[in-house]
Structures are given as structure tokens and as C-alpha cells.
Image (cartoon, rainbow, N blue to C red; front, top):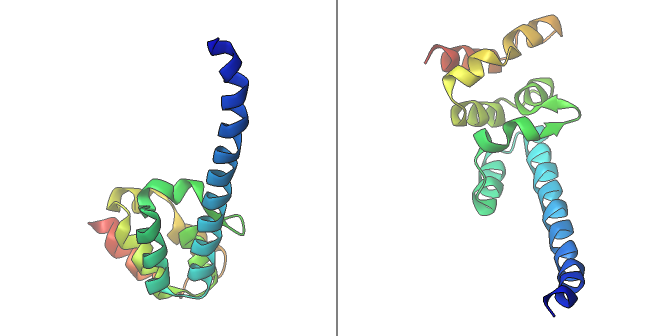
Length: 122
């Protein structure tokens, strides 16, 4: 008798997982859009409303194929980048290699590099 319910459970559970995946994609798209717009407040609100911490999703979210900080450097989004950098552990920021990436890609004058260096030192 319990076996009859298994297919029924599978039919109802599948849409729940699909909804969760699309919701995650929407949050990731919002994060990238707010970084590109340098909208720190909306970025913070989206993360808060979704109960997400940057450090938990940093490796899983990429914007135009770039990690969030590199995407912010590319878009000159200093406020958003500083917010993200402050949310990450200093040791993590030091290991990412964003300063070297910026220098080799023509962004050596970016003000975001100062925030990276300050956070890496802490």
C-alpha cells in the first residue's frame, strides 16, 4: 500500500525542487544586477530577504562568468564591492587573487583594490 504513494509523492515533489532552483537563479540574477548598478542597499536587502550570506554563496554565483568581486571591478561598482568584501573572511579575500587579476586586466587603478588589500591584511 505504501508503494502506491511513492509515484504520487514524486509527482508533487518535482515541482517544488524546480521552483526552488528557479528562485535561486532569480536571486543570483538580482545579485548580479545590483552589483552592476553599484546598488549596495538593494543588494543588502535582497540578501537579507532571501536569508543568504555572501560567504555561503560566493563560490556558487558568477556574473558574466566572473566572481562577484571581479564583476564589480569590471563594472566600477566600488560600493557594492566593498560591501561584498566586508562580508567575506579576510583570509578568503587574500586567497582569491583579485588584485593580481585586476592588475593584469587593466584595472590596477580601481579603488576596490584598496578595500581588498585592507581586508586581506585583517
